[in-house]
Image (tube, rainbow, N blue to C red; front, side, top):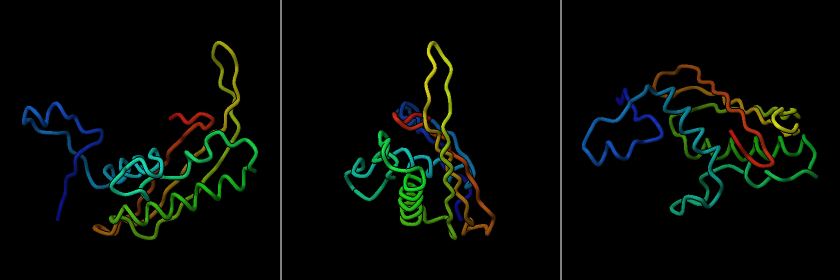
Length: 141
């Protein structure tokens, strides 16, 4: 049974120098992998065009209703996590979309997408939960 995993992002310079890479536990590894799925667009990984999430497809969509955006992202992400993250079982996704005012040199209003992923880690039967927060139009995290 694997008990430690490599932490993302991988430090390629350490691999080249044959040094040890930073490691993490299974929960943190799954959090990193869910983040990788969420921040990848479909077709970005040429070896598997289904890897990714549709959040990129709705990034600048200001015409679709918030409920429809929520459903598009949730369905896409749930399908992708179930297909690619084999260490999780009973995956459920909750998406909250809010308008938020960002104050800087000039004020901007952006949509904030909160993505909550819940499930059960198959290897340990422990509950799993992660939270990702993104701003869309354009996407940033």
